Image (cartoon, rainbow, N blue to C red; front, top):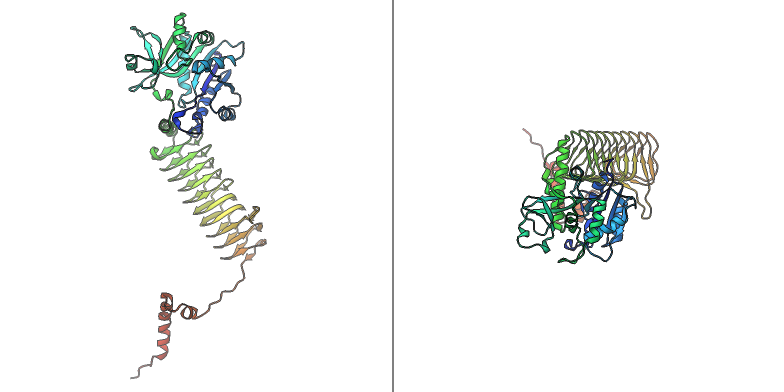
Length: 487
């Protein structure tokens, strides 16, 4: 691409009324990115001199999203003159005055356009030294799309929008994919001659084909073998279709790189997820955001990870985690809920029905069952007993708890923050820890057990419990009245 002077124009001005949404169409998401973000990434891969996005509907929200993802993008507002031709005309005015290269035009609602397809289009465009080259596709059902017009010898003669097409032209199955490469000067001259004399009263970019041909320039449509590349999203059904297709492509890419995905139909992986070879993904798994999984880890079934970092040989089962780090050999689940800020060390465990939040759990330490650990640091080789609660919130502020190395927290403990439990400490079952525990100590709550004998029989007469207590007491009573036999 270094020898090619390129600018990319992205059309993102449409309202997208068929989406029936308060969210602008190009901001709807598939594969973890908005539609416009997918297109911006493809544009950036071409290494152009400039990317220009043309906006209009809900322009502030759309512009903010574009600039957040691609800060160097030039934003251009479409004026009152409707149509894609006018949008591109305004975009050209935003290019440097000395620009004299080629212009790639993409649609902000066609998220599956990819770099290889554009590269192939550019190669054809430059090899034949054309003024305009566009990507077309052959569809069994071309309804609603512009048609490619050709003469008897197969040469392209123009593009007709469906609303302006004759009945005979509507039978054509080669459609305009909405992806173009133009020579800058030829495009600028053509746009100056285009009017709004058509069924929709718009300045069509597609009319540039007939204008360039009339001036003796070269124009051709190159048919793609992959119609999904040119597929636009206009409603929620098409959004779901595009998302499903993108997911299938992402999964195939990981499988070819050595990842085992047992059931692609129930597995969803975002575009920014990174999976090493020999990772295994089990059914019902969702991997979102910038999640990365290292070699030998097994994720799933029925697991959702969002923006997580997973080390080698980690096992995550039937759990949900967000913004968490799991070091090599860690074990998570089943039914664990891991909230942001949690880090689990090598060989550590967060087990069944455990919720963790902002918890740093050291190498070899375990929180095996039925516990809540929040705003806590746990050292190495410690064990948090079943049913333990780290009480981190006093109703106003969150406080930290520190648990040292080789600590044994008994079952059903409550650790009331802020508190520090030093290295080598034990706590007895049922302990409420309200103050710091020194190294090597045993902490316990001193409250001797009292048994009030006969209480059930006296206070719960007529209940099944009272009847059971009476039966249990009967043999002891009878044995006192037994008379030994004599011979």
